[in-house]
Length: 491
Ligand SMILES: Cc1cc2nc3c(=O)[nH]c(=O)nc-3n(C[C@H](O)[C@H](O)[C@H](O)COP(=O)(O)OP(=O)(O)OC[C@H]3O[C@@H](n4cnc5c(N)ncnc54)[C@H](O)[C@@H]3O)c2cc1C
Image 1 (cartoon, rainbow, N blue to C red):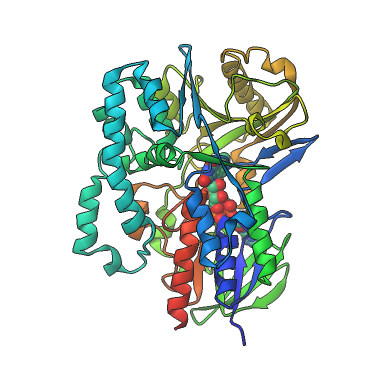
Image 2 (image 1 turned 90 degrees about the horizontal axis):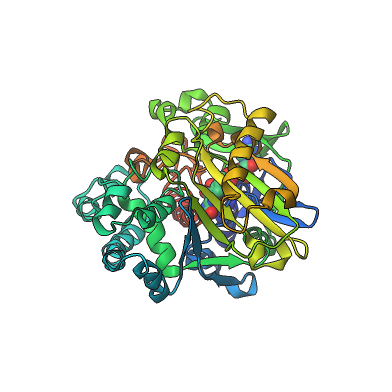
C-alpha cells in the first residue's frame, strides 16, 4: 500500500514538496485554508487588471526548472521563462536614473558614465562575491543542517571562514564602490529577504550578484503562472488539493504525528508536512508540551505595505522592475527595523504590463508600489483606513516625483492595498511578517527551525521558515531537502 502524506498549506513549499513526494510513490493530500492555492505567490485580478500579489522578482530560473527535471519532466512544456532587460531602472530622488542590464558590458557602460573607479569596483565585487555564491550554493543552501554534526564540523567552519559573513552588506560594498547611488541600489536588493543592509551579514550581496549574473526573468501572465504549472503537475501525478480546508490541529500520539484535524474531521496519514509558517504552527497546531524555549525567542522579518494601481495610461519611463531611492536612503531603510515608517521612503515599483499585455487592459498599466514596514510585533499600528490613506498619500506623492509620472494620480482607475494585517489574516504569516523568520546569523543553517521536528516523529516543515530560507528559489531548494529527509527516515 502507498504511504500517505498530508501537507498543510498550498504555498510554494507545500506544492513543491507534494510533487516530490508524489514522484516517490506517496499518496499526497494538501489542505489549504484559502480559496486559492499558491500561498503568498498569488494573483489579484480585477476589472481586466492582473497584479502579482507579492513575489515579482524571478531570479535563478534554473532552480524553478530543477523540480521538473528531477521528476523527469520537461519544464518547457509547462512554462516559459523570458529574460528582462534592463532588469532594473533606478530613479534617484535627486533626479536622473540609471539602468542595469543582464549584459555586463551595458551595465558597465551605465556605471562608467558615473565613474571609471566604480566600474572597476563593480567588476571586483562580482569577482569576489561569485566565489562566495558558489560556496553558499553548494555547501550551505543545498545542505540539510538538522543534525548537530552536519554543521558543527571542521569542513563547514572552513567554508564559513571563506564566506567572511560578519561584515555588513553596506560596509562590504563600500570596499569596492564609492558612489552612494550604486551602493544603495545594491543594498536595496540585498534587503529583499528582509535583512538590514547596514546591520545584516554581507552574504546577502549574493542577491544583487545573482541578478547580475543570471539576469531577472519573467513569466507570461506573472508569477502565478508558475503556481498553475505546479498545480498541473500535481494533478497529473494524482495528488489531491483541498481548498478552504483550514487545519486546526496536528494529531500527535506518543510523540508521533498521525494526521490532522480540518473542519472538525480527522484525516490520518503516515507523515505530516507543515507548510504553514513555523511560529504560527508551533503556537496553533501543535500541543504546547512539544515547544522548545527557542520557539518563543524567534525573531520575525519586517512586513510590507503594497498599493496595486490600475492606471488608464501607458508610462514609458517605467521598466518592469524599478527602484525609487530617496535621498536619505539609510534612514528610509533603517527606520522600519526600528518599528517606524520613514516619511521619505525608498520604494520598489513593479509594472509587468510594460512587457505583458495580459496584465492590464489595452492602453493601461498595472503597477505595484511597495515599501517595507514594521511587522505587527515591532509596531502596534492597527492599519485602519486613516492610517492606510496617510501612507498611501506619502507613496503617491513620492512616485509623482519620477519624471513622466507626475500625472499618475489623475489616471488611477483601480486601487487596492495589502497590509501586514492581510498577510497575517490570509496566510497566517506570523506577526504579519512578509519574509517569515528573519535571516540573522542565529536563525540560519543549523540555527533555523529544522525540517524534521526535533521531538515529534513523522512531522516535517517546508517553506521559508526552515532552511535555507525565504524567497521562491530558496523554498524550492527546501522542498528537495524535505524529500531527502523523508526518504532517509522511511528507509
Ligand atoms: C510582499 C512580498 C514580496 C515578495 N517578493 C518576492 C520576490 O519578488 N521574489 C521571491 O522569490 N520571493 C518573494 N517573496 C517571498 C515569497 O513570496 C515567499 O518566500 C514564498 O512565497 C513563501 O512560500 P511558503 O511556501 O514558505 O509559504 P506561504 O506562501 O506562506 O504558504 C503557506 C500556505 O499555508 C497556508 N496555511 C497557513 N495556515 C494554514 C492552516 N492552518 N491550514 C491550512 N493552510 C494553512 C497559507 O494559506 C499558505 O497558502 C515576497 C513575499 C512578500 C510577502
